[in-house]
Length: 201
Figure: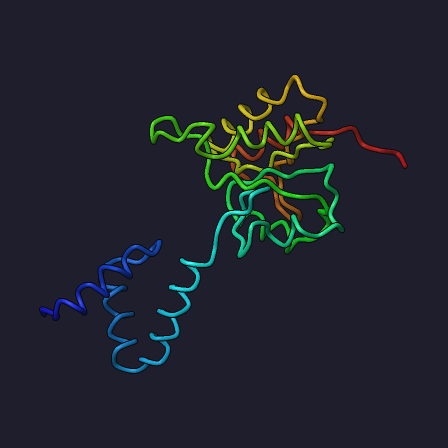
């Protein structure tokens, strides 16, 4: 079935969303046009406002609606501790888990020389400047446990090796409640390499 140019444009626009193929995009477009035009207009307005109004925080690179994000603006966070994450969704996951009271640095990706993504593209020169000029005592590397994430963490550790900051890596291993028989080999290797002494306290 052929659609009008406007409908085709709407369908094509929806396919830019992750995991949305042409059929799913077509279903969404027709649903909005048939049954929820008010919702479609609200979505359009929200997208327009977000694209115009959301910028990158000048300190941590996270999404913000002004020069600085809420985490960087508050004085209730430990400015001496910075957690490096790949994406805003990683930051949100750590925040929802609770417990971490420091600040963040969001890379908005990871190193990928094949794709032309080097240190400057993910803001590592900004991070290095903050560590050398600021009062950061610990940099926690919380990049993903993928080949690219591990390579990025290694690069940052080497980059900051001659600074006074302590560079740590979050532990990767067996999840709470996990059974060894169901854990993959890579996770088990991480668990063994990251083992710590048992405290008698």
